[in-house]
Length: 144
Image (cartoon, rainbow, N blue to C red):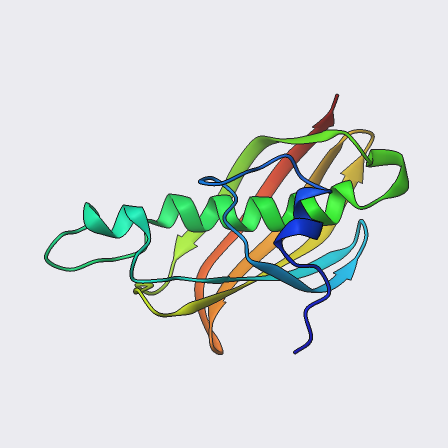
């Protein structure tokens, strides 16, 4: 798939920066509706050194953050939200369905399912290949 947004372009939309910018690129974007982003998990990721030293596994909470960052790209790509911030307002129905390991690539899909004023909900799924790794509903609030 072609890259629609690279890291430099993502940085123009969301405020996250290294070491906490956790998505590599965006391959699909319908502002305010749907986004598909990716994260290639290098064996050199800092967190693998301690989670767990004898069996490195991607921390689930960081996968949820990756999904949130992808969702923020979607929400903040709307003209009326440019220059604003997207904050977590809730994390619901989260399920960790498989281990994610160094060397794998996560495909992060977020579809906006509700919006009322500055509050919205995204249905979020992280895949490794065709397998669901994490599913969640993420509630966000758009603010200054």
